[in-house]
Length: 154
Length: 154
DNA sequence: CCAATTCCCAGTAGTTTACTATGATTTACA
DNA sequence: TGTAAATCATAGTAAACTACTGGGAATTGG
Image 1 (tube, helix red, strand yellow):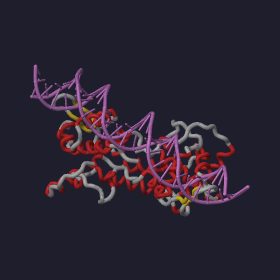
Image 2 (cartoon, rainbow over the protein chains, first blue to last red):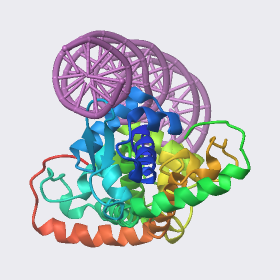
Image 3 (cartoon, protein in one colour):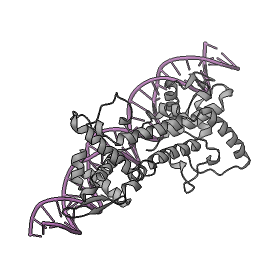
Image 4 (tube, helix red, strand yellow):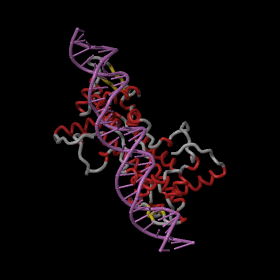
């Protein structure tokens, strides 16, 4: 039940992108520097986010990434779905397209998975990038007057 | 963000145990037969559930497992925590004991993880084994009149 | 005693994760 | 027009993890 680094790093990258939205295309390098992530790995994540239609890229010198839509219309759920795949905690909690298990009719655990899935999606869909960006900006301000000692990456 | 088979199989085993609560100790073999799971693997899961204080075991002939408490006082959250470990989607969403990341003060994503964790725990803690067992019993009744073709295990 | 059990620990094939490496392609700007 | 700065695409890989399997000891009811 753990999120992978794709989701964790990717969400950080998207918040970074939202915070620097006004400054023109944001390069992978600048995100990697600020967030202390591997450039090469970020490249892959941004690729996924692009394919999911959440960011657009401009190539060549002075190029970089931008949000594809207003940050108010991108949710944490959108981002994590793009990076982690379906947010359902099990494959059978979803829709009818899936192969049915023998005991589909008498499967109680499915009820649990469905409720869990709903809870996860509802909370994640309810958090917008806009909200996160503005929170991040106000946290940064506070953080600047007391330089905190470095330690570990999350 | 997927649950492993530990959580999925283990929850099924616990529901099975709750359904057959009145029949004395339930052996691994009988659970494995009904749920179509590997005996050897189940053995491990029951071991974890025992160590977590959710079931008790009696050894020897006629032995088996029972619920350690009333099924109304065991939640899906209890079971999944025992089998999957902490239900938090990331390691940093929890408490103060953890190592702080560099940007702990300005870490917005932590806010997301904390809300997600709360949603997961709240829903899972809110589902009791008693509820699941009674649901399972009524589903079984319905299932018996229309024998459904087997297909795949979840 | 014996058969049915739980208990314990070790091994292992396969998959996934979290990167790294290499190199091609595109583009602004001097 | 040349070059540096970017994205884009694909492949490789060490380490960790998953989902088991196997062997055998310990316990207990009949």
